[in-house]
Image (cartoon, rainbow, N blue to C red; front, side, top):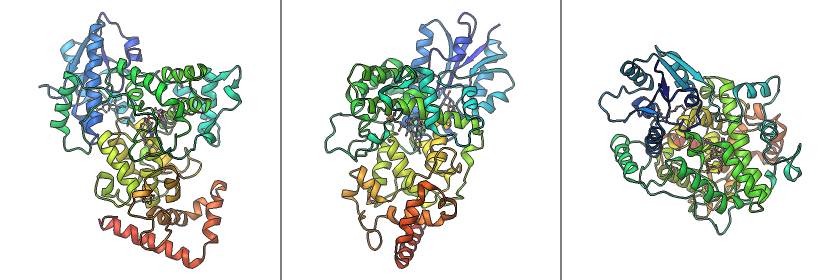
Length: 508
Ligand code: FAD
Ligand code: DLZ
Ligand code: SF4
């Protein structure tokens, strides 16, 4: 009896659970570019183009490997417009009533598949290093779910950067060596780029036609769209950038958008690269003496630690997680996030590169766009939707814990032990943004004072009750309390005035 084998746009791995469980001789693979997935948020056109192009290439590869594939292109007549609709259509065509699927990365789609009028078997997605059960066991009974301890478990499980039972080099974590400010010169000229072939060009035309009004630019397009290209991009990163990854992990430069970061998240999340393969490539470079331990460890921790941990939290916490709002922030997301003019150079540069590349590295997301939204009190639901829309690597399982939890503290502190807030001083130390800014980062109040300096204190003052008992924040409150009362009043009044101006739609 024929079964349908569902492969979603972010499940482009030959070893994925549904393919492993299927029978090439009798089962039919179903892949579909559908309106519902392309519009449930207004994704960046580069994200849609990347996925459609990679899906088409993956389908071709499965066919040449002997699979029967029913592939629906976006503008095919008869396209049912949704994953379940396409499954029903193909079920009728093939006389099938059973579907093998790998668990999707969003509750929304898991629920849709569970409610479908077909017999759907959902298999666990074993492209991750920790299974659901493993994460649940680790979390059970713990007062705080700190990433660091989970990460150590993953090091022990995989043997990555281990010497027997001990961490390589004697330490689990080299983060304190990884905070150098932006370098004057950058030796790396960025991630490997790929010239679109005819098939990718056809997808770019389609996306321009159908999604041209979404925020973001589809061209120029230089992302890898198959496993071979993604592996070349990884090898290029390991050789050229990884040696410096640790040192400059937190730095930001206006004209060097990726700095020493890998730009592998779209490939990992769509299945073109395997997380263990990526970690092993970094470990090998360290063992060969090409990369220092602080770089290899820092990079591996992002994938083996953070990536696995946030996925664990998303599935542990349940479908309501993206709607949490522990700090009761209600402000609308300001239009500057959609490219409206702003005098704040750090934000304008981060948004500009997001619009053009569908990419910003972690510190730009956390300490520029995320930090500003948090200290300005923006509704975390709107912040979450923005991050889900604008980045090529965004899927709810990874985006929501990072945004709602790590960046906006809207989960009340499950992920972060304190909110990631900073004044302009941090941005000035770690980047070259402030030099050309309309505002003066050294000014705390008065004409031209950096808005981050005002809003940082405003945030701490308005959430004093919640945070003053947090030992990691005691210093911040001591500094605030040492300020003359008159100065504190001026800071708060100027912060309010700034928020009012922004709320009225004035350019700030
Ligand atoms: P590198 O810095 O080179 O790191 C290597 C890899 O480590 C990344 O490709 C990624 O797979 C993994 N990684 C690093 N940090 C994290 C993290 N915090 N969580 C999960 N994986 C991590 N990452 C996404 O993949 N999708 C998202 O939608 C996403 N949304 C984010 C939203 C916010 C507010 C913040 C603060 C972070 C978000 N991140 C997200 C995490 C991180 O910013 C990106 O993974 C990273 O910037 C991707 O670029 P890169 O490949 O150059 O990463
Ligand atoms: C993100 C996305 C987009 C834009 N389009 C499709 C699509 O047309 N077909 C498809 O199978 N998947 C697409 N995806 C990825 C899904 O949204 C993703 O599988 C779910 O959000 C679960 O992670
Ligand atoms: Fe951003 Fe303030 Fe620096 Fe301007 S001065 S770039 S607003 S941190």
